Image 1: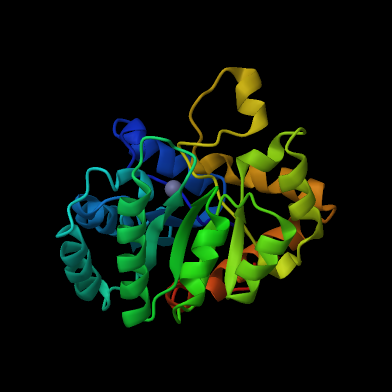
Image 2 (image 1 turned 30 degrees about the vertical axis):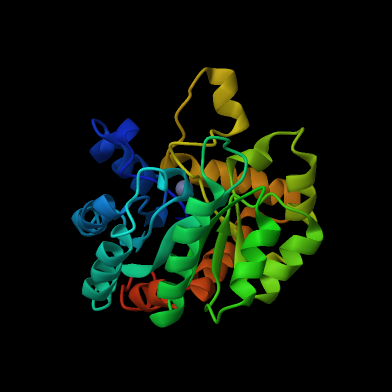
Length: 278
Ligand SMILES: [Zn+2]
């Protein structure tokens, strides 16, 4: 069985096809998906989706947060709205952490100070409620590491990781797993492939970031949208790059994700089809 630790099922690209997209993923043995919210106004809908499709994807879970790309349009009062959603969700076993949060120093029209305000305020919430975080890290590895070191955050996942070995080791030292997906299926992605080959296997988790980051073979087929049903094929290509068998990679990446997000692990332990060794 396979796990997609980062999938935006609530993206407008899936609005008309969601039922089919989820069923296709279920048919491909994707048993668990993490759905991160990207703005305060979406908190209720990601929670709703995680419950609505739990029959098809038993390990479907969500995190709540404000994505750096949405900070230009966010209000400071969204932090209070987010906190009240977090409080309401603490009793929900499908709620597993704070995210997607982070810093994006690649997109130029984002105000860095605004981004830092929302990122720091959300890290404070993660610390207050002792929740792991799902991080968006783009040209901001060192700033994010610095903010994490100032707090006591119980780890999480640095998604779509693309930093140096030294930065990777620092995230791992702070209790983080690193997310790999479609980007590593491109032969020219030398640095990401080297990370995937050489980092400890215990630090790697799989993700699609659907509908974004389409894997290499989709380009060839002229398909622009990534989806969770592609996770197993992406993961098998990652296993090839790593030089290990698909079964070993499936089992390791499942366990790694569960270790990073204890609430996800607790949910899966209560579901008979998920608490067997993968
Ligand atoms: Zn994302």
